[in-house]
Image (tube, rainbow, N blue to C red; front, side, top):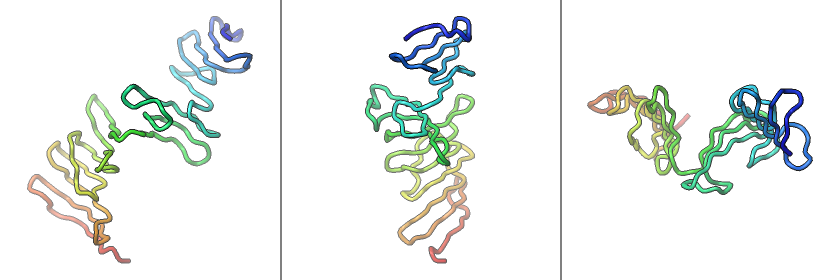
Length: 173
């Protein structure tokens, strides 16, 4: 069903079959609402394509990721206390940019879970590295490592010459 919404001059509302209520709405300012009348450029309320009760997700897929339930990425809001999520099904990093430059990356694959801040090129770290903070693009200023074979955690501070200090835990309480 395609029609004009009588409550807003020249607004378009598209619904499936004989459904009532909000469907896909385009207002006179070209704002798009899915499941609602929009109050911004894109406004989504309700359940998305891959849904569970109380969730709203927007999924992103292309020819590279595939189009199945476990392909691509989504941003969503979950019911209850689970909050908001950025989710990447692919074995690729999640990258965050400001001022047209990469500022943070969460690695995938064999370095999965490593968070790099302030550096965009590859830094594998150790197999137990979880956080690397850079003050320049060449070497990390701080690296955390957890769960090595001795059960110890380590926080190291570095400069261009290597490690200059650190904090270790013994793995016992």
